[in-house]
Each structure stands twice: as structure tokens, then as C-alpha cells.
Length: 471
Image (cartoon, rainbow, N blue to C red; front, side, top):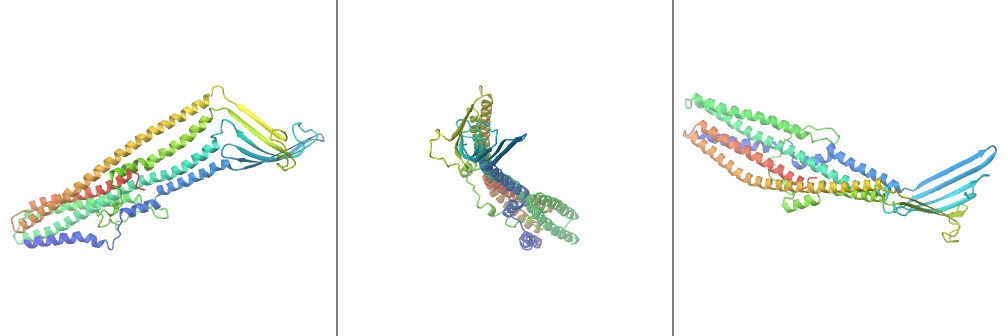
């Protein structure tokens, strides 16, 4: 009888060591490798990069509002042999940041029926257009460019947010995959032990040392473990498919994880989380200051503040002033310095208008103020939600750490009971029923320990995710 206990102990040791040895010829996949693959090749991660490029293109478009514009106006009228007029007027307009436009051009008027206000022959001008009220501090060109810069930064933050959520999803799938694989391994060990035990009991029955009912007892236990083995193998394979949904090749094709790829043997050594920030105050600070979801609200508020300034311009009267310095010939500066600006060789115009009730301006300005208020409220609520999540995951993480220590002791105690029962069984002082009962309890304790450990790692990643650090 003692030889059976020795054989079973040796078999258990060999079975536990086999996976570690077999991994030398089997590919393993750890959490860091999975995250790196997702960052590089997952379509959602690539789309986030494309979104950044689109925001950069929008920024280039907005800068186009300040590009110099070259134009020309050419016209001529001839009727019944009379050359009424001929006009050629090329002009360049250079927008500047503060709404002022610098323009210069030349005119060439010829003909017999010219408008008296036109200067016959060749002339040139150099001048400016200045908004005196509306559009002086903010206009559409400046607003679009400022907002485009904000949206370019927003695209970077949204990429962080997308990766933060995507990596959390893949870590959920990864640790579920790890859990089912290790559940499968320990049940596989129990199947091997009970197969050996059934062989021993059958031999004892032939030798007249055991009753026939003992073989049924042993066989029932073996079949129970075989059922669990098949079930966990199925769960492991399906978990692999769930994990495969996040894995893509560098060619842009989906990758199906083969069953020959397994988690590393030292999956529970905390190597993957050694660089994680696990301090509560630091995590709360990161969540409130750098979390990409909160940062998106900052950028949105910045864009809305620019819109508010633009809408405020609609409450001001439109007063535009245009001045040109004139010269004969094509040299716009030929007469510069000869006269003061309002003495000779000049042209100016002034335009003023204001809606009497300012209804459109007041309505648009009020609407953007309400948008800002709405966004700030949403930001405060989101900040509170994130803080609650961080605290919840932190509490769960510390509780799981304590639970794992307790469950380790619990499993060790059950394992000792199994070994003690096997010794008693080998001495003829116990029964298969008691061994099976002890073995089932030990298996349940071991399964619970694996569940707690994988959940512990999953919560560690969730804690980083809640603080916006998982990118």
C-alpha cells in the first residue's frame, strides 16, 4: 500500500513539472507581448493613428486661410467701333493674424468712355484693410486655425483613450485565457493520478485485496475529472479564439492563435506588473490630471472658448476701413514720402453696419455659453466617476492580494489532508471515498487559487486603465 502513495506522489510531481519542460519546445505568449502586438497591428490602433493624420490635414487646411491670394480682373468693352474701356487689374492680398489685410496691385485703364472716377493709364496701389470692431480680436480664419491646433492635440489624446480601452479589453481576454489553461492543467494532473489509482485498485481487486465497489468509486472519480478536463479544454480553446480577435498580422490579416501557443509557466510571478503605479494617491492624481478622457474635455472646452470669442464678435458693429496709397506707373512706392497719407495720392473707404436688435448675435453667444456649461458639468461628473473607479479597483486589488495569501494556505492545508489520507489509505486505515473527498476539496481550492490570481492580474491592469495609464 505504501508503494501506491509513493507512486502517486512521483506521478504528481512529474505531471506538474511536465508543462514547464514542454514549454522549451512550445511557444508562449505573455501579457506584454500581447499588448505590443495590439499596439502595432490592431486595426483600431491603426485607425487612431489615421485620425491623427486627418487632424494634421485639417490643420494644414486651416492654415490655408492665411495664404496670400493672387488675383486679377480683366475687362473690356467695344461697341460700334468705339473702345469704351479696357481694364487690367492684377492684385495680391496678404492676410495677417490680427484681421488686417495688406494688398497691392496695379491698374491699367484705357479707352474713350472711361468712368471719371478711374485713373487713366498705368497706376499702382499699396494699402491695408482694417476691421475696427467686429473681427478685430477674433475672426473665422483665426478661430479655425486655433481650433485646428486644438483638435490636432485632441487627436493625440483620443488615440491614448482608444488604446487605453483597447488594451483593457485585450487584457480581459488574455487573463481569461491564462485562467482556463491553468485550470485545464491541474485537472489533467488529477486525471493522470486517478488513472494510475484505478489501475492499482483493479490489480488489488484481482489479488482479492479490494472489493469490486472500489473500482466503481475510483472510476466515478476519474470520469468526473475527465469531464472537467474536456470542459476546460473547450473553455481554453474558446478563450484562445476570443484572444485571437485582438491579434493581427503585420500584413493586416487576422491571426488565429494556435493551441500550441500557451501562457508562460511563470505567469504568476508579477513580472508583467512590476512597473505599474500601484499607489492610490498617485493613481488618483494621474486620473484627475492626465487621464485621456478628462483631457478630451479640456480640449473641447478650449475649442468652445474660441467659438465663444468668435460669437461675441457678432455683438459688435461691423466697421471696416480700407486705405490705398496710389502712384502713377507700376511702382506702388514711386510717390511714397511726398505727401502725408491723407494729403494726396490716396483712396480710402469706410463701411459701418450693425443689426438694431442683435438677435442672431445674442442667440449664438448664449448657445455657446450653454455648451461650455454643459461640457464643464460633464467633465466634473466624469472626474468623479474615474475617481470612484480608481478607488474601487484599488480596494479590490488589495483585497485580492490578501485573499490569495489566505487561499494559498487553504490549498496547502487541503493538500496535506490529501497526502495524509493517502498514507492512511496505504496502511488500510482509510477508504477511497475519503481520498476522493479530500482530493475534490484540494482541487476546488487549487482552482479557486488560479481564479483569484488571474483576477488579481486583471484588476492590476484595470487599475492602470482606470487612471488612464494603459497606453
